[in-house]
Image 1 (cartoon, one colour):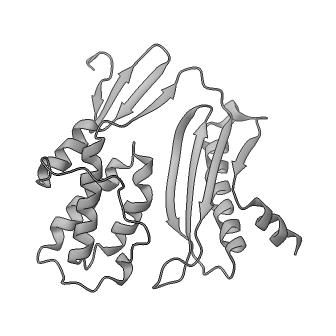
Image 2 (cartoon, rainbow, N blue to C red):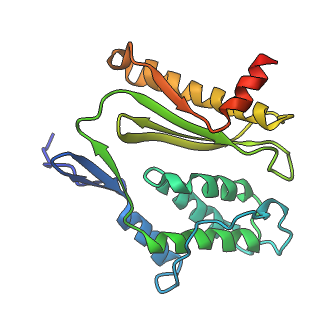
Length: 225
């Protein structure tokens, strides 16, 4: 076994140590995606996806080479390791892997143009973070025009360091926004339980877990009923 020294780069992830913690990013990986997409000289997009998009209802022409779309979205999925803000838009794009259309390809290229504006965005992992788990969760309500299922999104922080995030379509159709929020909190709680019991174990024993949801009043009303 050979000692290669301080870790600086592994599997497309750049690691930079500082006195207070460690930065991780995928700058080179993001630039490679931009270059391969031919958008190195393009204008950056301010947001990765347009608001109120209707990609699920897109009826444009099918792509001649769907593997090109599948490869790009696959690369973007790997990029969400350090880019939590891409979780939602990549979740949307990944639903069209089988039969991508021109509209879907244009939406994927918009994500790449968004990356061009900030390819070096980083996550900071604090050395002195406590082991208090915090989670923020939310959901939409029957926003998918095809299935009418809602989306769950959560973001988990350990002390001051982000460690887990996901956007996921709920398994059942919610009959109210409060029910959708309740399912969102249930999914988030499962993730927190796994992190607390299996991932960190005894290190988090006795520490409370804090969950934030902006629709807490609706949830309390649903529970009361």
